[in-house]
Length: 327
Image (tube, rainbow, N blue to C red; front, side, top):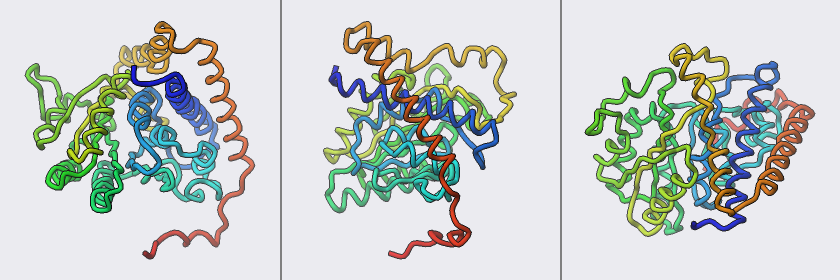
């Protein structure tokens, strides 16, 4: 076990905060209090936290339209995120980005991205900057199994290999590219005829592995190898995490592409409960310690929602500000 007690508590805190955040914004959206659209991350917490526990503020991540979990795992302020989703002026992006475009450069969070496959090129840029300046930073691109089919992803993987960039591609394979099952949309198969996203990435020449994305410890170990390689100048790698999203593609998705049996099964495995069982049975943490984290996470979310409800909207005069940036 490479994690000490404090690190284990921090990992659980991040995962529990993500879960509480997503469950609460789901309810608030259904009550008509959040504008726009939401894509929820619940069920995939072990991937974001297993990856980001290795990262510093000076490292970078590029996210997806399903980005709340990545933001929290990377250390973005929960209150600022909630204000942003509620479209309030003191949100992380002054209420103009909303759920799909939260960014916080002070935390190395390059932004959630409504463009499927939008983050790999951005992460290559961040990784190239790190290599040229010798900062020792790494850059991580989170993409889904749907985005793994995009040309931007293939081109970025190839570029990262050619330039030996400190980039890591994390493919969150939750089984669906929006509403299309991976068995249909992925042409790459392994020897048993199953979709093989890691194998396809390996075809670019980089190390690639596939792990149980519901198992925090499996993700953490895979990321440990990838980070060591990137920081030592060994170039890029790919981690495919096999996981499940609890909700539909977006809030309100009728999920007619999922069978009734699948919908009944989807929450029977919980990455937070798996983590809890592992650390308590191993006498690494106690139930009492974890319950304190549960209570604190609920309080943090409650306070964030209260702050968002009380905060003002952006002024009309701000509509055309922050559109362009001059360097």
